[in-house]
Image (cartoon, rainbow, N blue to C red; front, top):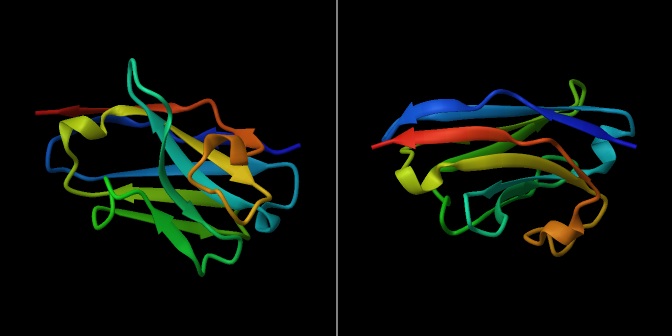
Length: 124
């Protein structure tokens, strides 16, 4: 069983940047592909980014590509999401998730464990 806890999000001005972290406990962190998703009110949960167990492969949604970096620190069992040039449409609850799968990483049902989520608000 893996427990995931996201850092506090917060309020950011449009054009600003934000760094989220997600700390894992339980399980063997380095075995898991880690992902970030987000969900805005009235919308489905959508994929943001994912990173393979080694950190060597990363994947990004088109909506954030070029404005986002996912990284991980396996000894510290932590995954990070840095976002830049934030837009009002980036506002959402952000979730980190862990998966033992190597494919289908943009799908929420590919993930086995989820954090509680953290609110990110972007002011225009």
